[in-house]
Length: 328
Image 1 (cartoon, rainbow, N blue to C red):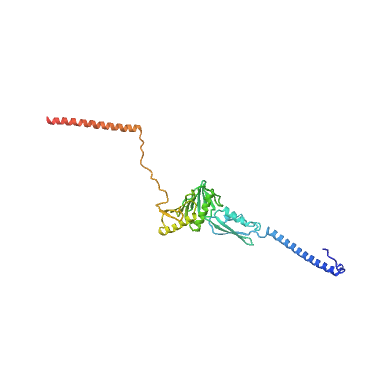
Image 2: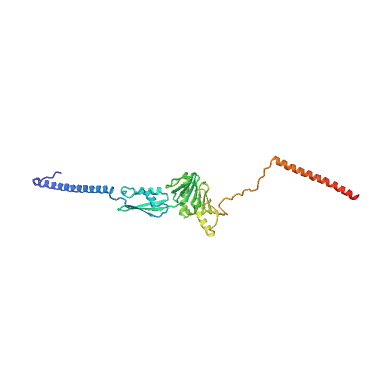
């Protein structure tokens, strides 16, 4: 809108002048608003430019929390953060994920930051709970299924739960191990859920899923729980929990086989050991007989018999001679 001079406004009719003044007032107000917006945008642009270059840069990195597996330098290196990096341009969620994946024993990495650029990485570590035998060696994982390590041999006296699978599993350190057979995964997930809810998972020393019709658990290395097929697992495990509680009150050292294959029925069979009986090896030497040996043995026997017959025939003649001599 073009602004008129005072003389032009004075020559206008009262109605036209009133309309003009109202429109002029609105235009001036809009111009002020537009100017303010432009100034604000300019300020924001300057602040953003500074924040991406000079402001909000990392001034220090500190490691906090529990954990003894990794040192501070190792954790900082895994994070990929450096002093001087710009915090605005850094995706800290991805940094946390990178730490948890590259350092398998880190269960959770939480990053906090301040305007002054101080970064704190709080570490919470996990621990090994499961060992899985595979064709390539064994998989070490925590209770949540995160792979901690893949090694050639099974660890000895590790007190980890041995998970036996028919199909095996594949794993990459830092990621959850994957079942080769989906049915085994479903059974495993249900068992873990039931046992964890009952507070028993940490006491299971072996879980055998190699035969889905004959699922077995071993409790504290001394009670073998026979669950049978995968149906009615909830009822079977509840029955097993009650049986374990009762037997622990009676005899905490009991070694037995607990049959839970029939829902709502429990049979406890005491054993001397959960290990299968060892067959004794025969230590007596085995003599191999040949035709020559048999012939030789037969020959010696015949000679001995002939000598015995000769002695027998000679003795009577001597007696007769003597007798005859005595008579004379």
